[in-house]
Amino acid sequence: MHKDKRVLKMFPDVDLIHFGIWICTACHKHLHKSFGHEDLAFYLNEKEKLLRNDKVKRFTNWASKQRKRIK
Image (cartoon, rainbow, N blue to C red; front, side, top):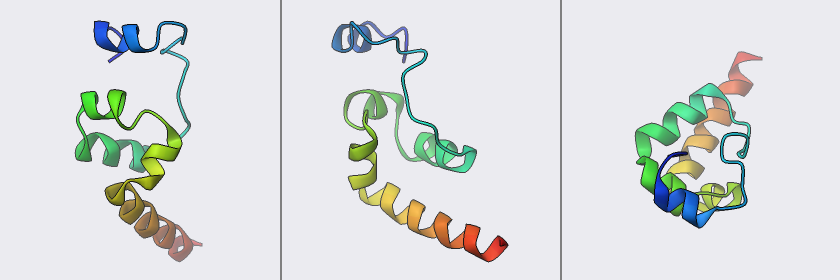
């Protein structure tokens, strides 16, 4: 969405290429499977917003249990 004019207008002073949060590959894949690019850009564009989302909560709870099993 870095080239989307609506996103650039919404975040004019932010370097969108380098702006973001670090997440694991599994979480990144889950986000893109669960939400469209527009939803992520306009409604779930902050870590706190993502963590309040029910789909994300369920996945992160499940993922945290999987990691504990591996150890």
